[in-house]
Image (cartoon, rainbow, N blue to C red):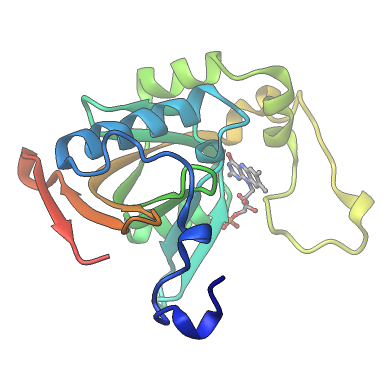
Length: 213
Ligand SMILES: Cc1cc2nc3c(=O)[nH]c(=O)nc-3n(C[C@H](O)[C@H](O)[C@H](O)COP(=O)(O)O)c2cc1C
């Protein structure tokens, strides 16, 4: 029987080193990158997938970062773009108008995979806005029918008012945000040894690089 003092401090005993079976992409940069795109795409389609609700961080005019959870609405691996929806009056919209540089964070605790994305955010307009609105369900539209801007101070919680007619069903304040991916940092935790890599898409190319975990 092993005792804790027999085990080097940075290693777990064999008994505890067994984790889930390793993904076949474990030692391949190309396959890890492809798997990252698969996970992002699944995050759009599967509301129960951990990647469905990532965190987006923007920076305000004072350099102060702000993070929030959003719902991932679209993933286009060809265009290297993600999309989420929000309210035109929200703080994040003001922040990205001043500074489009942002970050997105995804973590799947079961797969033990974290993605950290460097993105540039932009409000989408024209056909992209129309298509996104057309695909929005009535329940989602309600969020945008609130007459006071998100984050407005209230005397009491029931002072918040919704008015479908006054907000064109919510359309007035709805905006899809495109997140153009500059880079993805991959981290795959595994008992056999962690794997960390950078998938850099800047300047129209794809550069894949292993990193020290
Ligand atoms: C599970 C979950 C999903 C959310 N999805 C969205 C979303 O898709 N769009 C959005 O604007 N806010 C969403 N929110 C609310 C944001 O996290 C945030 O509170 C709100 O957008 C105000 O952020 P801001 O003041 O930084 O702009 C979600 C919150 C949770 C907990």
